[in-house]
Length: 173
Image (cartoon, rainbow, N blue to C red; front, side, top):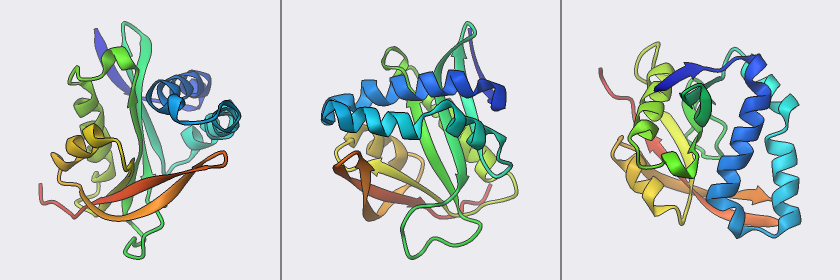
C-alpha cells in the first residue's frame, strides 16, 4: 500500500538515506567518486535535512510503500538564480523516486501534492531546476505547464552541470 505524508524533523535520517540513494541512482554515474561523495555529504547530511524539515517555509513529503520510504518531494521559496524570481514565488526543490518506483504514477501524485502545497494560498509563479540532459523529467514537467526560461550551473564537487530553469505562471483553480 502506498501513502504520501508530510515529513517532520524526526524523519531526517530517513530523508538523508533516501535522498542520497535516489540521487546516486539517478545521477551518480556522471561524477568522479570524490565529487559525488563531497556533494552527498553536504547536501543530504542528516543535520541539513533536520533544518529543512524544521523550517516553516519548506515542506517535504515522503512516498511510502508498506511503510518504507521510496520517494520524496521538497518545496519552498524560490532560490533559483533568475532575474524574474520575485518574493512569494515557490519552487519545487526535489522530486525523486527510487528506480523501481519510477513510471508507476506515484511521481505525479507526489508532484501534485507539492504543487497544491505551494499554491495553498492561491495561484503563484512556480519554478524548478532540471538537468539539461534529463529529457524525461523535462517532458514530465512540461505536462504540468512548466516552460524553460533560463539556465544556471549546478555544482557537484568540481563538476558544473548545466541546469534548465523552468517556470509555471500562476494558474487559476
